[in-house]
Amino acid sequence: MQFRIIPGYQQTINRLIKSHHNNRVGHALMFLGEEGSANLALATAFAQFINCSDKSEIDSCGVCNSCVKIEKYIHPDVHYYFPTAVTKKVPKKPTSEHYYEEWRNYLKKEHFVRLQDWLEAFDASNKKNLIPTADSAKIIKDLSLKSFESDYRIAIIWLPEKMNAEAANKLLKIIEEPPENVFFFLVTENLDAVISTIRSRTQLIRIGKVSNNAMSTWLKSIKSGLSDDDYTKAVRIGEGNPSMALKSLKTELRDEDLTEYFIQWARICYESRKKMPDIIDWSDNMSRKNKEEQKNFLIYGLDFFRSGLIDMSGAIELNHHSREEKMHVSKFSKLLNPKNSTKIIASFEEANMALERFVNSKILFMNLSVEFGELINPKNVNL
Image 1 (cartoon, rainbow, N blue to C red):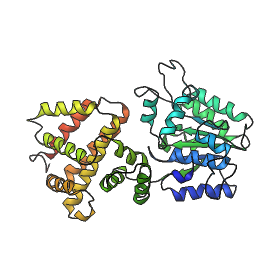
Image 2: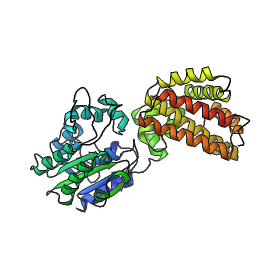
Image 3: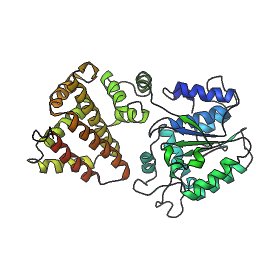
Image 4: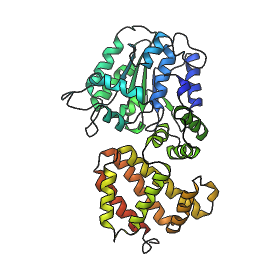
């Protein structure tokens, strides 16, 4: 993977390139970014840059033997370790090695990875997942060998927070006394969940948000032919996260369809005490949608409510919605106040996080609907 295909993050990329040119790359780097960010993509691109045999000042060449193999995820000196789970394919003691073919195929499709997507890629979406002790032993074994083709051997560990205590302590030992010409790239979404002794021995690389302009340019380059409203909405929903922005373009619920779907739901909730059968039917229908559509609905709702607060404050020029959406936002803002809006946003954020914990989505959306209905009920709106 070359740096040039990763949207934004130019400051971070420049920092990585400069560290290499100055021969100051730490032997253990911690790439910290939120789920769906470019943390793993940047770690891979940096591994490719380091081992490229014909790199320019600013990027790997993309065509040398090393680059071609890294882009195919088959380079013998670049090793990946990641969460796995018990499945029909591997009913006992799974390791990264067991699922490397699935991992390789997944990364060829998704540059901006999410744990739930990866688990679904190898049929483990409802399974407990972790990086086992056996993987730490494999890291030690892999890195103790001499390089096959390149000057450097690189271990890319995705989600080290998923390591159990024994696995983390084994990894710690080799990070403390690394072999020569070895780099550890740890890619995390939750720094606090990584054991402190490992954190203290790594150089932190923070992966922030992508700017709106960079995101819009990137989306248009990889998915052309959509309307300006489509791109604008994707940028807004993505909030600087390339995975979320891209997935919002792919979902079946988009633009006017999503707006209408959300408004229909809000109207049902408004009369929840009279329309409980409709809420049950709606929740059942939503539970059958894929997780991305469910999350997109919740993210759209959060954006809608925040726009309602902006409208309520009178700063309507800050809202970048379509004419139809602005009309609905304007009407809905009359049901909002500082008290209930805080609770509504909190309930949507909690539902969004709960989806990642494999809850029963039908019950989740039914509870959300009832709670939302109570919060916007005129009798309760000022409570």
